[in-house]
Length: 363
Image (cartoon, rainbow, N blue to C red; front, side, top):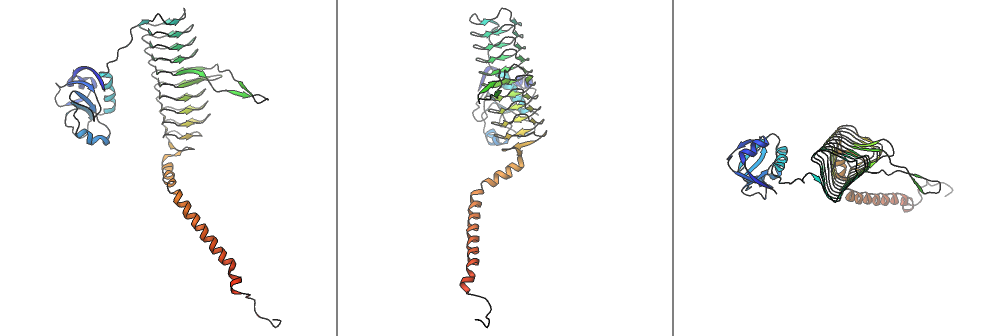
């Protein structure tokens, strides 16, 4: 639940650009789930699975689509209820931004350039030659390596490591524990079987409006760059290998792993635990369901599942067949036994009927 000072429902409707149906003088104090909402709460309905819950909700008001069935409370109607809900959560969020300034417990190189309104928390370490844009917030315990560039209005949460020379655009959010610019996994085998490390000295670029989840690792390459393009959203525990390019507005869910030198084009959606081989391209607008293994280049607009990845419809048919395999195996075994019995009887028939040669005078 999200709490804040109360707003009249008519004010909420105006700010969310929704059409009000009902009592606009109701005071809304928080955003709550459809099943737990009470008087004074604003809730949200978009999934038909919650139609029963909507009919019995105790919320003061609900955000819903223009063509949705009426609710038993005041309604805020819109063509985009999910977007209106997201804006409602932001409207009612009671977040207190850290005050601008530099905490005395931080370690900041003498030549660091800080924009107006920057907030630097305690135990932050910022190396030489770093630039941090206006109004960016750096929470406690962050490390920013030498030569890094960070844009305006970014939020960098605790224990993030931004390695040397990384470039981060405007309005980027880095969640706790993310590591941006870690060494790519590059080694060459020596003649004695040991491994020689390939120095990873390439660049990492994070463009504007990217959000990177907790414990994400984005590797730098030996040469060239790893680039996350504008608007991409990356969930927790994602691994992005060296020299990978993630396209605009791509969505990568938790535990996705992308091997080196791979291109993920714009608007791709990879569900949880999807794995992508090195040196392949996942075409624009592709969707991959959870635990898909992408081993080859995928055309734009594909909808894929399975390992190796195939068309989702084909995979669903195959998955249906999987459940039948134990019974089918038993049937095949029974048929094989029956066939063996029939073949055995065929081989035994001459002995059972005696010698079938025609009689001669010699007999």
